[in-house]
Image (cartoon, rainbow, N blue to C red; front, side, top):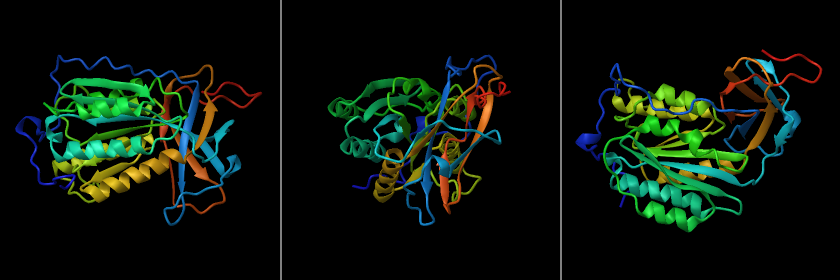
Length: 320
């Protein structure tokens, strides 16, 4: 049986033809939008002209800028097989029934089956206006498999609300290399906050979000006037701004390729780290990473963080 039925219609209770609106007197969820960060970690993925991963780079090969200013990074982890902390955020709304839920399970099993010593996983799911942490971070694969086996889709989709909780869900992770995998069809018709608000909250954390969009469309190929484009563009933007990647999954080959690429990304990252100043004005700060003296096709990393400025070099005053 095919993993995804592209022609499967959404249940009537889970269709959204216009962006969800909020009543004038409604309040947004009490998500924490303050992430206390004293040390900023920037996972970096470097690919060559043929799309291959670039090995053997050292600290001196990288240039890091924050808000356009060069920043030194005392912490540097070379590309290697360090363990990961991985959050799965699963859409359990009614539109995920059938082949889409089957595909979701297969995607997660791929990562569980390839787990190595030190890897840890957390499992969370969402439907309606509820997000549940089913399994906190653990190395116990059987516990995760048992929880996944109990999934039953229902109701509408509070996607943005669930995404906004990712920083809290990942708080207890212990590994430097960490990420979230969001599995959804992209529809949202139950959230109390917008996609932009959710992205802003996630951007304040150090969590790349990889998105598996099940039959949710390709933002670069789907006509911009359609609802499918709107969902795909929203998911792609979330992934891009957090340093992850968006995958449009239309069948088993797409799913297999996406799982393999994400596993490689997570397992083989460079990590650059720098300290923030003790004082200053909290603000959103852009991050730019380049590789010096090398011809590379793509350098993937988080696009910024919200917090205090980088700590000034020794002997200089506090940054603004």
